[in-house]
Length: 567
Image 1 (cartoon, helix red, strand yellow):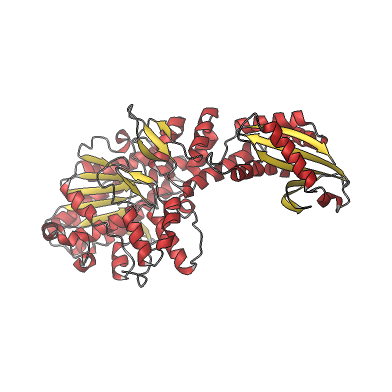
Image 2 (cartoon, one colour):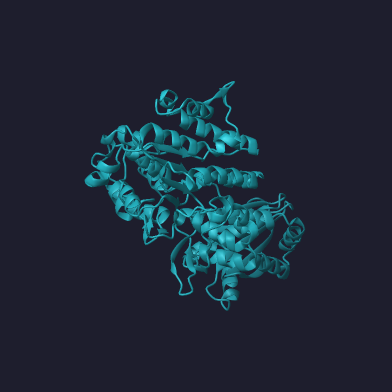
C-alpha cells in the first residue's frame, strides 16, 4: 500500500474504492461489532463527513446477495470465517440515502424522496417476473417504479409503505429477510425545518419508518445514520427495538473517523510523516466514546493536496462542505454570559454543560442550552471528559473549527458593532479631535460587549495583533479615511497610519499589550516614545501632512488606555 493508490476524495462507494484501487482504511470490524452486539434497528449519529456513507456502502456490499466477495480480500472481516460464511452475500439489501431529500416546498422534497425509493426499487426489476409473487403483488411492485411523463407517479400513501412493501417482496423472492440501510436519515427533517414544512415532513418520515422498522415481519435488521438523534417521540414512536449509538457511546467508537495510528500509517504510505503534527493540530481532537479521532474528509483532502503541493498549508475542508449556520445562530443568540463562554472556548479552555443527545429540529432554537447540545453532536464541540455531576467538559476540537468560530465572531462584530453608525460617528469624531476620554470609553464598551478571538496563552505580539485587527476594523469603517496597517515609516513599521479627510492632517497609532492593568499607563508612554524616536511621522510629512496627532494605546484583557500627543 503506498503512493500508487489514489486517494478517495469525495468517493464514498465501497465497491468503487476497492475495484479502482483507492486507498482504504479498513473499517470492516464494524460488521463484526454490529453482528455481535445485535440490534434490530441501529442508529449511528456522527457529524457530517465522518465516513458514515462509506461504512453503509461497505455494509451493503458485504450482506447483499450476489456480492463480489473479492472486495473484502485482505480486510479484517475476512479473518472471521464464521461471519463470512453465515452473512456474506446472503441477504437482500435495501440501501437508500436521504441526503438529497430537500426543496423549497414540501411537494418538491416529497418527490425527491419518491425518486430515491423508485430508483432503489428499480434495482430489483426481476421482481416483475418473479414466480414467487402473485399478480397483485407484481402490480404493487410496479406502483413503486411506474413513470408518468418521465416522472415517478408514486403517491404519498404508496411512499409511506414503500420500504415495507419492497422488503416483503424481496423476502418472498429470496426466502430471506431484508436488511434496510438508511443513510442521512435526518437531512429531510433539517431541510424541512429550514424551509417551513417541518411538521409535514415529520409525519411522512414517521409513516415510512414506522411501517418499515416497527411492524415489519420481513426485516432482518436495519442500520440508520444521521447527524442528530432526533427525539424518539418525534419519528420513532413505539419503536422498542431501537438501539442508538451516539458520539458519547464507547461501542463502535473507532469505526467512524480515523484513529491516530491510521493517520500515521496513511502519511507514511505517501512519504509524508513530517506532516503529522500539523495534521493533528488541524484535524484531530474529536472524542467519540473513549477514542480521539480525526475527521476523515479533512485528512484525505490534506494528504491529496500535499501530493500535488508538498509545501501546502492546512486548510478548512470539512467546514467548507458543512456550512457554518449553526455557529452563526449560536453567536447571534448568545447573551453576555455565553459570549464570555465562547471566548474561553476559543482561547482553549473547557466549558462544563449538561447536554441533551435527543432533540427535535424545531427545539434547537428554543434555548441556548439546546444549541450547546447541537454544536456538540454535530462536531463543532467535543468533550474532554465528564464532571461528577454528569456534565460534559466541552472544548473546540481543533484549529480548523476554531477558525470557524473566529470567522463567525468577526461577522457578528461587523453586523452588531459596525452597523451602529451613530456610535461609530461619535467615535471617529473623538478620534479625529484627540478626545481620549471618549475614545477610551467607546473602545472599553465595545471590547466589553464583544468576543475576543485570541488565545490567552499566545505571545504578546499575537495578542497585540488581535487588538490591532480590532482597531483597524473600527477605523476603516470611515469611508472618508485612508487607513493603512503595518506601514514602513521612518526607522521601522508604524502599526496604523490614518490619512484623514483633512489633506494637511494625519494620525499615527502605536498599540501595546500590557500583561497587567497597572502597567497600561507605562505601555502607552512607551508607544508614544516609539513613534517619536523611530520617526514614524516622516511618512505623513513626506505626503505634506504636517498636522499630525499620535496615539499610544495599551490593552489589557478587555480594557484599554489611550494617550494622545502631537508632532
